[in-house]
Amino acid sequence: MEQLIPWLVFCTAFLALSLWKPGVARIFLGVFFILMAVAVNLVLSFLSPDLFLALGTDDPLVPFYAWVFQNVVALSPQGFGALAASGELAVGLLILSHGRRVKIGLALAVAFLLIITPMGIWTLPNPLMAAGAAWLMTKDFPRGLAQMLQSRHRSAGTQLLEDTV
Image 1: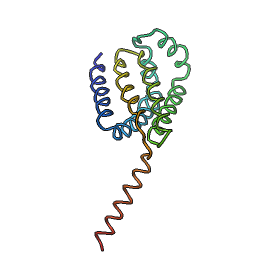
Image 2: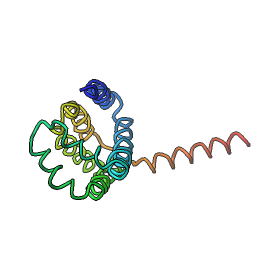
Image 3: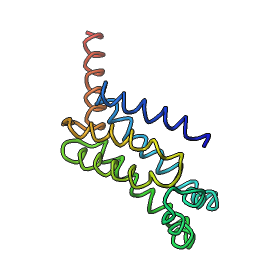
Image 4: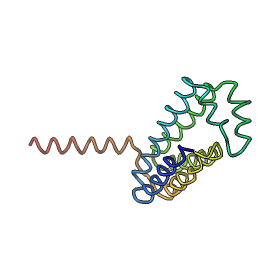
């Protein structure tokens, strides 16, 4: 329960950021998915498989989640964690991409957030983050993060050349 309030604030802040600065929110969400893939699904499942299993067995809102974690995930928490991390990593990279790939990544993010919402009371704010991601799907992102960083690097280099002349 103590995780609910901070997560509610976080998801609400993300929704506000999505409405206010969609480009920044898109980059934030992509990086967030990548970090969660590594920190939660990969590292937690390998370093503390019992805690990883507890994510789905400690008071889920839908009993089916406890059954899945007890009877499927428990067979190989590390394998399931690596699989989940791969999926989240792919979602994050798609979101940081450009064009149609961003919309695919955002749609997958919405689906992922809604699917894991019944895991416990602490995940109840997930639909707020999903709403922010869904709003971002209405925007166009013709450039990916790598392209934005390259153009920023080029313009900084050009400015440096102009300053030295």
